[in-house]
Amino acid sequence: MRKVRGRHRRHRIIRKKIFGTGEKPRLCVFRSHQNFYAQLIDDIGGRTLFSLGTHSKELKKEAPKGGNLKASDALGREFAKKAKAKGFGKVVFDRAGYMYHGRIKAFADAARKEGLIF
Image 1 (cartoon, rainbow, N blue to C red):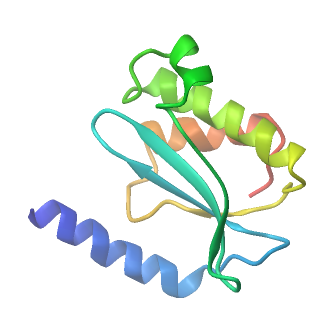
Image 2: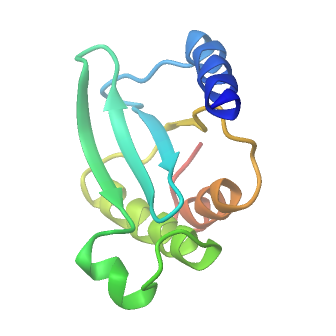
């Protein structure tokens, strides 16, 4: 429980510094033991613009287990493709208090390779 409280504290500190708009939304990630989720958020309007997770059907074919590096990489590629198709090319990356390594880094690198700018 102490690890979770520490992550929430770090996330509050990060959220003081970053802010998403309609033109440049905030890309927030969440990882659980079994899945990985990402969403684009407009903080001005207070709404989620687009979200995707490793539990979706199209990603289950490529990576049946959603809580590993392969699944995070696949999610990053798919998320960037769909976000660009919806007109979001630039985003602000919110790592949500997680350290930038492992699944978080794999997701971010894959999204950047597909053309998402952050």
